[in-house]
Length: 95
Image (cartoon, rainbow, N blue to C red):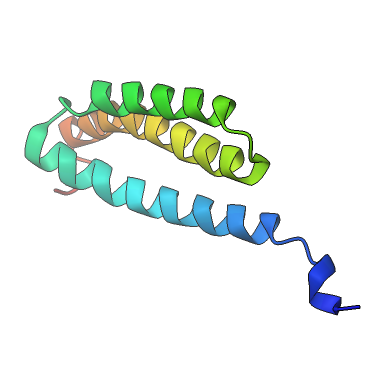
């Protein structure tokens, strides 16, 4: 029996996806806010809702989880764009 065959890779895959989506989302929020203000917030939230719906429709559990993580990150980034606006107005964040 192959010892590697019984390993569960889902946890590692989901951890990496979470790390990447949060990191990319953080950078996108700052850059998009600097360039477009709060205009990208609603499209982020709508895209997140659409990806969340897609996560409920796929048959593969791992793909569903990856899509769900991406969806929540997108929706949260939409909220963070507004929060970035407030931070900028209070001069707590840099461009």
